[in-house]
Image (tube, rainbow, N blue to C red; front, side):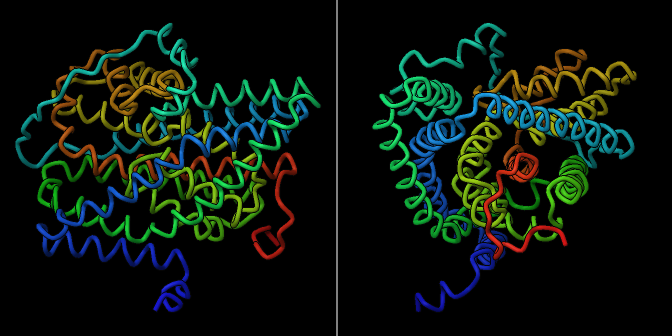
Length: 410
């Protein structure tokens, strides 16, 4: 029985569970909601991995990438590509939202929405540094873990021989975490089944009807961004066909779509880029946690752009060309500035609405379907992380020599 199960390609198992979950949630909503614990178990299992995996992987990556100039160049290229795709994502969102009338077909009911406190610039930067690194590890504060791990890695480099025992220990820890990750990811089909059954059973398709155009524009913008922008960069700079890329990262995309968590998708994304895209473990361990923290093409590019125009249409407020420019600028900058802040997408939308003078009360009309929107946002973010890892790794000769991948363009 188990042999037959594992003989099925992993992505087919995940896709089958995804479709089955949608059917269960749609045909038997009570059963779908009752299956939620399966999804909760999967999310808890991958959250268990995140903090130790990120810490060990980043320290190992920095100590192995021991050329300071190369590390700086890698960081600049990675962040630069993140920012470029965020600007393009905003442009796609603005264009589609402007040409498609998203006015709701029925009267909308506002959902109770707690006011989101926007931290000041100083507080955002202060939150980068952990006052207690062990607390950051315990609480899963990924941004603080990244900062602390980077400092540990740099310190080990500076100490050279004296830091070698700790380097070897942490490197061994990273290998152990990679192995545990492989074990936990075998639960993916079960988790996807539980999560999709619950989402469809809990929200149903009827919830989406009044906001179908709004949701449709966001999904269309995400699809165009993923296929055209990411696919184009993969073909021109990543050295592989878009079809091979999307096939290689498909199961990680499903994990991102169902869990709505960039951090929770890290183990699946790491496996995809190292085992199927040929990216070295060292660079993958550096770029993926960084991308999960600051790369927000879905949350910070597409979503604020489309949501701002939708709210403007809802209240009958005309927007000028200057407003469109401000939306693009603030959404892009906020995607980096709000790194590590809980509820990042909502914070970025709040910032954008404040800048162009739109009523914050408009958020209450779209809050009810945030989970459905978040699925597309997270899918876009995680796909972007994996695309950047391949493109930059190829430009820096950080691809593994694995001929069986058959991904290099002919």
